[in-house]
Image 1 (cartoon, rainbow, N blue to C red):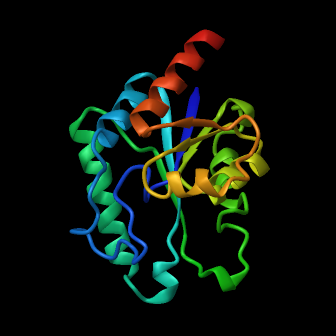
Image 2: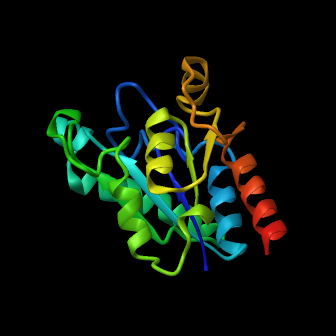
Length: 184
């Protein structure tokens, strides 16, 4: 079994500093849905781990978040793929929870659902330093995409050593599939 963990906002869909608050605002980035389907067709389980502090801030409710995720899953299924699991942190940064990235709680929970998989073989794809730091803490290799906050993240520096940097999710998927084939 093979596993990939994706961040949501800025990796799969357009991001906004004002939060994605509705199903209409949730719009996939070009090629992202097809990239997820490609991972599925290549035999990977695809999980999403996303900070969603907009819940704690009252910007949207759980029903709206579930509808956004249903839209995302439906679009992937229309392309012949699937998203196997979605983990989200509903807390604000002030809640000091263990699931909010940059802490590794969401990644560790996903990994606990796949006890036979070595974390060192589970790629994490994100657009922020928080995603990369959580991946490093969980023992997973990371890929930074330039979409979303990716360019800003790269400019700020402090990227964990050995992080791969690519243009978008499609490029990340090609990297993952290539490296999986060469390591088999």
